[in-house]
Image 1 (tube, rainbow, N blue to C red):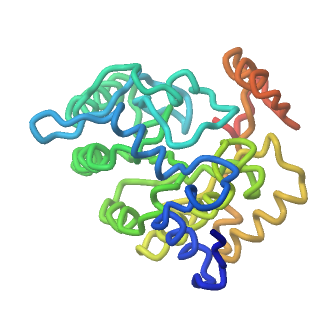
Image 2: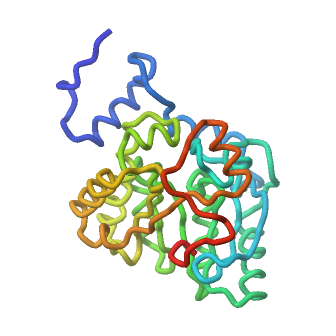
Length: 288
């Protein structure tokens, strides 16, 4: 059975939505997995409900030098399968770690903040938005403090559902960092294993956040993995961002692979060679 794209609306994002509704993976050959469907699978393993409270698997809580000092809760599970991921042993896993409630997570992170004098809190390691209710409850607790929560996310779900972006806009102390996996749809596919068309959802996440009233470059900003990107692709990427809002092209957080031993292991597994990478003992200041 052949599907004519002319029967769909020309808007790229509506096209993606229709494909998902039709479960197009059963009708045409796809080049990679569907991260929306993978989200559902991962949720069944890394999320549970305890007396109506959504709990999430975590594998550690820690302080660190990033952002000038931040308390971090590392979650288990992700809806992408990045072949350069520093936390792949846990982000690609389903059954590791322990379950924690939002209140337990907040208390552990707040203790780290008090002990070390930090201002910032984040969830990292995997994809925080997979456990949405859990995340929102943590944000509500942080909203009662003077701390700032940095939401590190690939943006897939924020691009897929604009209501999530609207909900985030209700918080005054959250900053969203959308981490692009490469500078083109093809790079995205090579680096994550996902179907190339889902790359568009990362751009859509930026649009949804902006349309929700959040300020580009202040309330949210893009980051991008550049270790595998030629210069011409990066230039085109920045131009694409500027079409959404000029500030976004001026506020990019540039990411490069840090060659920790376990990162070298996964790179070798997939025979992936970065154009540029960073020695873990000599990380430049702009990446910290």
